[in-house]
Length: 210
Ligand SMILES: [Zn+2]
Figure 1 (tube, rainbow, N blue to C red):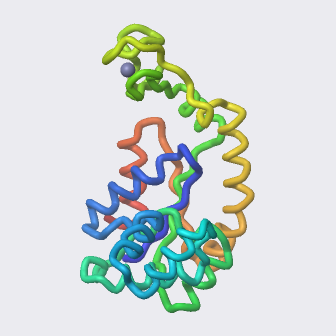
Figure 2 (figure 1 turned 90 degrees about the horizontal axis):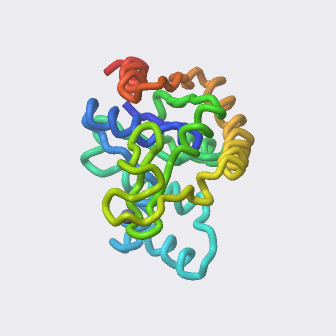
């Protein structure tokens, strides 16, 4: 089964993609990773990607899709694959279709913005050693102090509510047309994220028939 996973930053898309990857025994393919790998291995498109990255340019959709195609042709993708983080735009989705990369289902992990904001703003990171905590799910023994080194734990700039809301707004704006695109093709399945990750996983596995 060939799958695409969509989800806002903080919605837990990566975690769910991992669960499905294990259950169906198909690889989870993140474009960032395969770009770096292809560049390192010097594949046809990898060489082009490296040239773009070295010059500081964005890697074009053509190159990303070329590398995806190379990756999907590998043996471990015979039973299927999960695309995690690609496509992000309608032109990218169209390019996938045009290259004959068949997608069976697009799984969207949907979590309300307010919930994501709450979850993310509960994250704390140690100023000293970088250990991570969460005030609800993984609190440090003494509030505001790292268990490991005793330094102060702080909220990262990226995790501050205003920043989170801004990133979510950008995500929705970019992803809405993409969701629409796959909905028209009858491939979009929305999984409502639950409070418990394991509950979300049950729904995700059911959505892919695993
Ligand atoms: Zn620490």
